[in-house]
Image 1 (cartoon, helix red, strand yellow):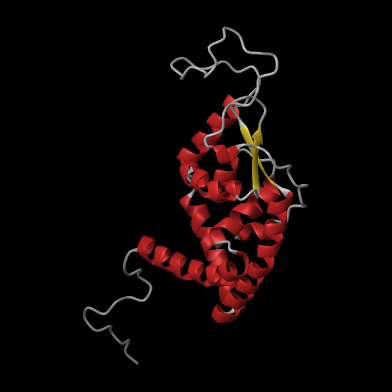
Image 2 (cartoon, rainbow, N blue to C red):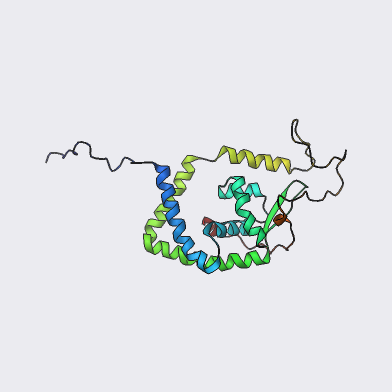
Length: 221
């Protein structure tokens, strides 16, 4: 039997059509709306806020730059997303190894809110699996993992993380041309106090909750 030829102008099903970035952003909006419809009415949290609480719970105490790298966020985006969680008293931004560094952890109230939202997230996850099909969801996860691996790491985020780790190293002197420290004293105090927070809501007042055991599967949110 002679091989059938495709009609002129017919699209090849194996050839991508359209903009991949646009399609991924469309899918992100649709899926985020599905999850938010489960979380918002029950917990008052968006999926992105639950994800942030879950990552802090697993990694705490964690530097903001390290958290941003784990979540694939720009530092400015992370700072903006943290503000309402700190204002609610769910996230504690405390002092780090020196006066310039900070560490994030959950308060007891934050851990309780995260556990409350986890039940709603679970219902959303099961609903998504039922709507799409568990096998296809597993294939989707594998495909996305392959895509991220093939695209490679973000050099800008790696550089920012390296700068943060370097600046937090004990005894490190500022590099030439670096901005001067806020203090004008000729030598650092033996016990420096934490530098002022970016906003009043960053003041570390509540106590941090105990760190739960890390479950890597919960960091997919």
